[in-house]
Amino acid sequence: MLKKLSRNEAFEKFPAFPKRDYIEEKDEEIFFSPQTFEAFILTVSSTSINNHVKLLASQLKILLSELDIDTLTFLGDTDTPWRYQKNDYKPAKEALLFLEENRIGKKFNGALQIDTTSLNPFIKHLFWLTRCNATLAYIHFIDNRQHLVGHICKYGIIHLHSLNKNTNALLKKAFDKTSFQQIDQCIDPFNNYGPIKGRQIKL
Image (cartoon, rainbow, N blue to C red):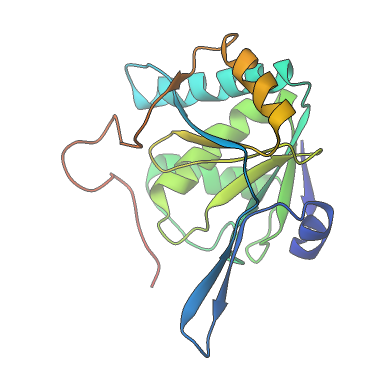
């Protein structure tokens, strides 16, 4: 289900991956992002956060199928390990257990390659890790041909970037096969009353 790549292997194979490097001498971060053709902010209409995540994963799977993409590789933009922070909030705890059961060690900070047939459970757990762990890196995904780069933010919204003109045209056609809605602004549709429940930061 999950195939692991070291960070070095991932960047060698997919140099378009976004990343952040901390320069201690200057006390600043250096950001790298690939040149993109167009950016999209995608969401789905749902009545609960759990249904939202299921629908998000299923529609992403449809979109990828329309683009003839059968594998995505996920990698954090910093070297923070996937399991860096414990969390007792049930969905986050289940997500950490999912990683452990798939032999993702506590110090592993490399990439995970996911066959799209196994995308639904992975997206569910990735969302809860991202939503509940403020220390976690931004986990970006890329296809094997490096035509698309994206990430799912803490609000359960997909930020997707096409990297060339041809892919961009195919992507716009593929949107019609899904129930994705394009929005202009990233907001949390499920939490209007203070901090995100279960969100923690490790200092």
